Image 1 (spheres, rainbow, N blue to C red):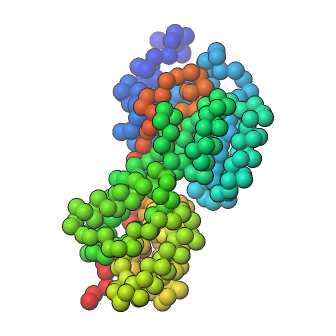
Image 2: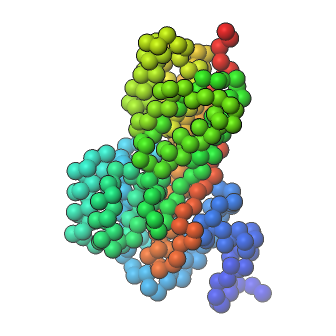
Length: 344
């Protein structure tokens, strides 16, 4: 038989078109893990193609969805925008960008604007909203999908994240395998789920290896380079004051923190990785062009944003999201910023 079927589009037909199993299509449709990035993308394109021809009758045209970011001038944010925009454009949905810039005033202003205009959904990729502001957002009756590092503690809200704990374990175990024993962790904000998971992964790897986390070696900050620079200098200063050797390796919760730490080490005459090894998290584009190129944990940010956008459209269509939290796989990317500790 030739031509396209005019009957209902079943999972089996979608699987045949994508060249995968029906179980794989089901995993992608429900946001479950266990599917490679390339396969997930291929299935998603088939799904988007069919949805564009058969838009659910209850999704009205002219939808507007807010994508809310901490900032819009970072490469991490650019990947989120690219991933979400591709999905929303294919669905004929308008995406409105908002940046909070870590400011309570900006958050309050955005919430006030949201209440005064029509908005059909919010993809929230920030960690600045307070519990009270989350309640305010909920009171507006606007569907919300969370994208890490937004906290994810809001019970019942769909969340798209990455395997933060497993990625942190892999990063720390890589340093341990190189021979490091004194390993510090520059963590993200303590109130953010992603940061806590990465810190927990660091602790797990250290515990498995029978290594103690030294006092002051786990330091919470923010995900930016200024925090990495500041906390790295504090680590060095505290070691000097105590008359103890500084850590020989540092695992940072973000690439920006890791690059800030590298700058701090170099400002003190320490070589990376000759004196201190550094590993980051995110695999942002600048990590591969840094000198030395940064060993890091890759998280599929653009794919995460695309999945968050597709999840938002499903929520708007009235679908039930099960499971509510989905984590896409991370992987260690070995480059040049980590090496065995110096002899002696």
